Image 1 (cartoon, helix red, strand yellow):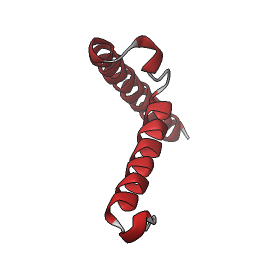
Image 2: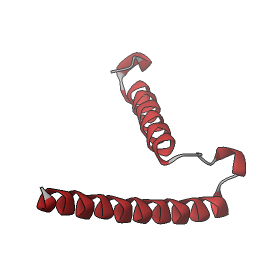
Image 3: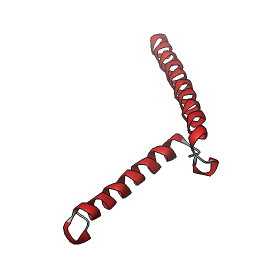
Image 4: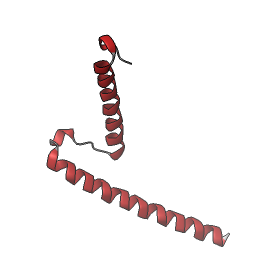
Length: 75
């Protein structure tokens, strides 16, 4: 049982370290984005940024399909 506890503690420590790295990377992304985007366009959370990006990609696909398909119909 003692080995199990040590393994879990090591895994937890690894998760904490990875979380700290992600937070640091996100801070760097925000700092870079602040240089080029108005403040009201900055996402407040990494998953919001991903969600917003995927939504924008979807909108761009629809717009492209409308422009490239005959008679402007979406593909």
